[in-house]
Image (tube, rainbow, N blue to C red; front, side):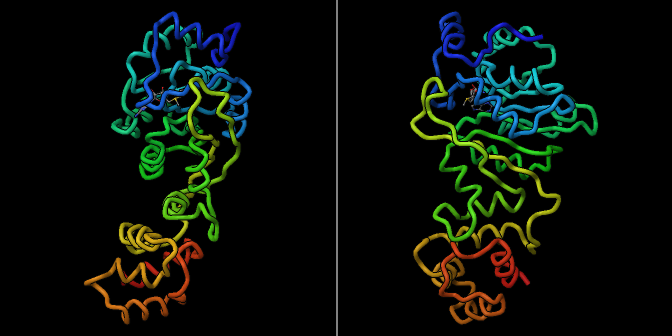
Length: 290
Ligand code: SAM
């Protein structure tokens, strides 16, 4: 069953704000969507269908949750702000396929809650308009937790989406691109103007679509030393790889040893980190762990 009017309109949003005297908390990244077309495009990009289950982070007033309930089989949402409970009970009263867990998603045992909520082998997609202050920790948690999700489609700050999906030799390419693309393929699928939010954020937004890889993109002997080496390589972007690595390995490997490792990996130490592919970083990191 659906309501006469979508929640995601300026007039409905204002009406519920007034009815419950709700005030936005900037510290919780509360920017609600007031445009149904944007939501329809997000759902299309996510590939949500009646035979998929949907997981949402931060339902807010229920704008996206409602569309997910209409177009997927069932919805599980995590919301940190208890003040939204009476509003969501009202806005989503017509839908029987939504469960809301009032919990900080970063502290929740996602594996356990997902297993309790969905039937085994249910196709699951995560779709959200994320709170921007915790975008990276949330996405990192979702990628590292080995959850039974097919994909993650999230609206986030444009600059962060560009960095997550960036390829070598671009301005946005960095350690975040590699951390994300180690676990998933990443694509920016939509740019979204500020005007579709209430209140309007200060930054532009994009929708990022991530598809889990069955195996990490590259084989590394030791994940934490790989990620540490990648981060250090981008430490001072304008400096050569050789320089950044010398700083990183100070006291552990001298310049000659580093040069020898670079040679064995077939990488010229005068290159800058932004020109290295994830495969090259993996070869290089493995030289230091074997
Ligand atoms: N989905 C709604 C929409 O699109 O209109 C609201 C999106 S708003 C950008 C982000 C939502 O995430 C807010 O409702 C906020 O209270 C919630 N939130 C913030 N931090 C959270 C956390 N750590 N865990 C769960 N929800 C969180």
